Image (cartoon, rainbow, N blue to C red; front, side, top):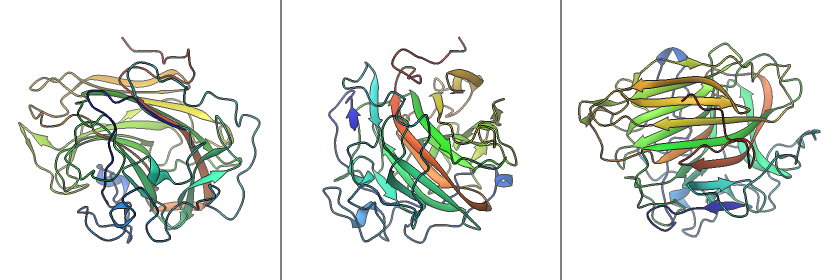
Length: 357
């Protein structure tokens, strides 16, 4: 089920292609994944949603199976906690922009700006789900770093969005919360899987980023970290194109204490929520923080994320399969119940995260 609150404008459709394998790892020590051959990093014309049906149909054979149970050859393992959590509410709470629990769609392209299946690396599957019986399966493989993604577009954006889904396209978002549930397969080893999400302020139609807020596993660790990144100098965005590592500047990682990707935590649905607030132009008062299962993990409120640049606000959430260096063995995890809002979301209908003040 996808639910939308169009803030400052009605939901519209959109269109774009992008580098599904681009690292987005703005700290060079974290690795530099290879590009996905299916897409063009300049938002160009090879693969991606641009080559598909303008009504959201599949392009080529890299999309989800219309039956809704495409993906790996091995069925998802059933768990005691599957189907026990709150999915998307029938009526969206005030301030919610997007919610998707994957129970009623058959192709992720129907609800996101750009989707790359990554040769089976990131697909919609049946038989597992936090709030139902469907979820997105993320399949990790040895020596394969980047393999699939989805981009949720919202707010005013410079990206080409004609003919593809985008949400509240006339609104400017300077503050957003995003929430998802994630589950690693039973017996997952003590190792982090790289990128979980990134929240972005795109600055131009070539997918240049002004601000990026990563949620990812700590390198060589099982904990989660937030990494704020800027590509603004004064009032100018200095990046050219997507993931311009030479120009992106890390503002320092924020590491949480919870071993969410440990073997002991495997086979359980966990709730992860992030919060990004852009700084007042010219001030260092931006905020980035995140929670696991409703408990605050890390928070900073003195960030100069965008200098005095204010052409766009926050306008995309990216969920991706990106493991620098590749997985140590074939491994799977699942993502469900993705929500974006302008106020705390929490892990249940009456369960807002514990704020830091």
